[in-house]
Image (cartoon, rainbow, N blue to C red; front, side, top):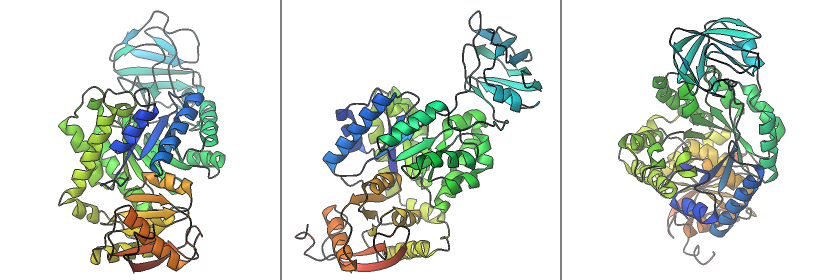
Length: 478
């Protein structure tokens, strides 16, 4: 099944999309990789979903990626003795270590790390930013705050601290248990929440030990301040616009989305744009015009993937949401200005042989108007390098490793095929043409460009580019 767009679609599974029939429909509609949110998924359900996706994958013969999204720390206030309370602008409100249920003047904060790190002048956002407090007096057991934006407050509402660098791990005991369960069933990507610093990513990678790739969710101001370091140690980024928009002024989020998309592309790391992309389709079969423009912006920016959350997980129209995203991607990429926008954002290649080869392959393919670039890749690095160039022709990645094929499902423009490794260079070129012919990327008599690392099967050695004809025997050799 060949996609007619380069950008990938990541669909979240949930109550509206858990059975085999629906997952098949989502894949046929355009989903390339599926997300399982561990905030709402017990381990037995995780195993069931992974088995179902693998069954769908086997029936279509195309690698399908699975991303498991860890919940991360959830910071919440305690309870109130008499039910919800009203906090008014200008009043004083205390958060403390006293476990007694709260009232309109105070509440328990069951997170001593917050009280220890909080400083006067720091903001506290409660209930997704609906209530805003400013700390005036702080101590390890008590914080006196002033209400800047009031509102109703009830039991266990969330707390966000945009100004405070919290000395907490990105992974809770629940996350560690969820991570082990995910690795045991062989998922492909881990999305790491609550990332504040590069060390958070490295901590997860020590546990994962190469069994999955790590996608860092950028959702906190502290991560923005250390973005370069986080990108360096991550395998991919997710622009988590929902939480980012709670802790930062909303008007900053579009600019940060562009910065992160370009930074990830420059680093050769996949980037996913997420949250509220087609939010109205949770209840409506058609999106708003503003949502269509929002999705289109991510496509024009050259993001690797765009993500559906509740739209596909719990909405009334999960298939329609994927189909809509698919159509937007196809239409934008047909637009006459799309290629010029993508080309204008192209970063300079890194000073490595592999990146130089990737740039040369793009230039050759575009100058000769070749129908496809074919990459033989063991680890996926060759295909990722070529995809970083955002070439005009599609990229066909051939790999002997199923795990590599699944991880490449999130990478821009890559159509991945799992096949036995080539015996030698001649076999590599011949089978590259045959596979591209079979999947509809090239016709007999056309030329293709083949990129690989020699010796074959050695990860990270992109050092060969070759132009070859697809002979009339391609069809017979399949």
